[in-house]
Length: 159
Image 1: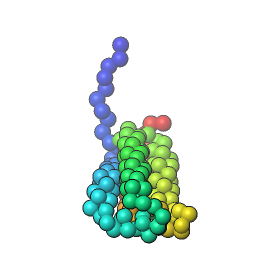
Image 2 (image 1 turned 90 degrees about the vertical axis):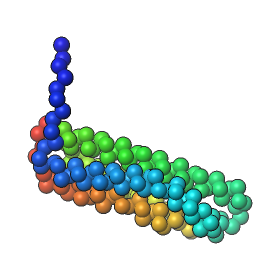
Image 3 (image 1 turned 45 degrees about the vertical axis):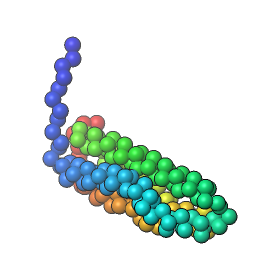
Image 4 (image 1 turned 180 degrees about the vertical axis):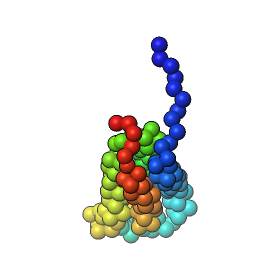
């Protein structure tokens, strides 16, 4: 018969990193929520941006492009939140592997954010507006800080 064990407290060395990871997750959630709001409120500016990049597209296709970008960026945000949760869970348990896990999650997040910021389409224009690309880098700052804190806080307890 198994008995339920009480949740273990966050190891003291990991507390600053855990707080930083919650901040990063909040930034990820905030940017994920604000992307559709930004595109909806800046519809004319974003429509002009897309129309300038793709002068042959009609209004319907520009609208489809906007919707596709919103869906793509929201999915990116959801995956980011899941990565934060996974890393937080490992850090709260004090697992020894958490610095490696956090480093990999950070590298993936930074790579995707830089891709979103720098990717250009066949017309030579950025696929996303620069503001959206830069917003995606905000959680990466927290990720970098968390990774540094986790590596400095080693060794962790469990394997």
